Length: 124
Image 1 (cartoon, helix red, strand yellow):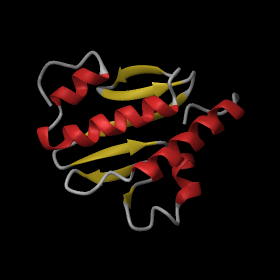
Image 2: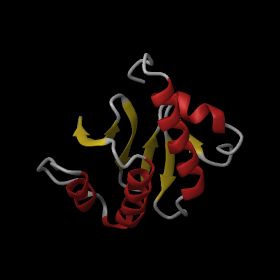
Image 3: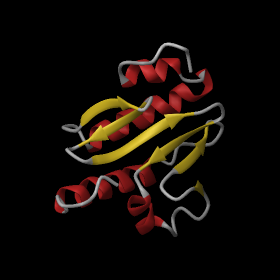
């Protein structure tokens, strides 16, 4: 990433490693289609979607990206995620691997439904 902090998600993607930009653009378009009314913001240097609570985020790294739908957003998909690298709340996708768009869409849609149904839900 460049030294100047990006102001928008498009700026963030342009500043990301070149080999990751196609994945990041597809992921951004996918998340935007799932949550078209969500606020888009750069918080703590990372793209966030908020409606009004945190929905999901993503981040660019040297050789991979992280999609962050929270631990609660990953848990229902644990079987489908067995072949993917995950952490407590993130799905990691290497730039040299295909973006699992259908799986990400299902997780993002689930997260949006969950947040809308549980307005008393905590930030995460």
